[in-house]
Image (tube, rainbow, N blue to C red):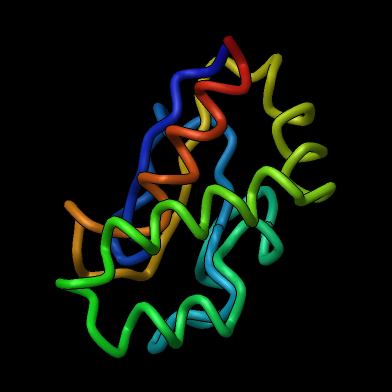
Length: 119
């Protein structure tokens, strides 16, 4: 099972990042594609557009329900199963996100899902 970390795309790349996966559906503002080093852009691992829009209407009160809905999306996603298989032999994986909120974001849910699936 890999050590899965989360990092903002605006933070500098580090040798300890390992396999870098960008996990947002939308490209981050202010970053040119050639300036972001990533090994995989896993758009399909991000929350669906309707779920993302719903959550951002009121994140404080919808956090718990968002987690449940996003976990349901992950559980039914062939692409996420393929992603989990792809990283199972990697020693280190970094999930890259554009979110400013380091304590509440979809990558935390995705990491929990991938770690639980690997056990």
